Amino acid sequence: MNLPRLFRNFFLPTLILLFSWMPYALSTDISNAAVAVEQAEFKTLGIGPIQMAVLNGNPETGPSAVFLKFPPNFPGSMHSHTSGYHAIVVSGASKHWLEGQNESDVALQQPGDYWYQIGGQPHQDSFPTDEPTVIYVQFEGPMDVLARE
Image (cartoon, rainbow, N blue to C red):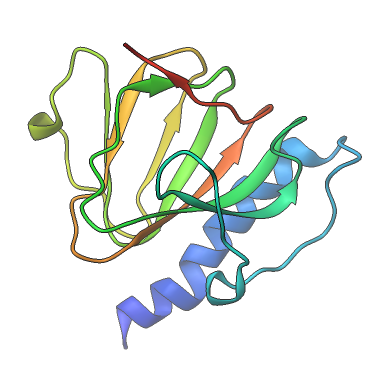
């Protein structure tokens, strides 16, 4: 049994589907969708080299599901979001920590690993890998990035 292939082809899509449908049931911007990460249309966000592919919803006005792609060894910076979000590493690797924590104290998250970030709480993400990292993110409201000084 090839566990990485089984995970990539069955378990990861199942997790993504489970997390993506629940908050959208009442939204008019949400529709049925099936998007393979290899076929996703990534566009530069305009905030550095980060790219985004919208999978469902509208990130500007309400709940949405997106893929975010970060370049290799991207350090990120401390920031927050008005709304909370769920995230799953799809490929590459990520670290996620809260204000007051250190990057060295948190585990490296691999494909399939999940975290939830509440809105308004400063945090930072880094992508310490030699390959691009793609994460699936399900925002509970409009997507914004509020930089910390």
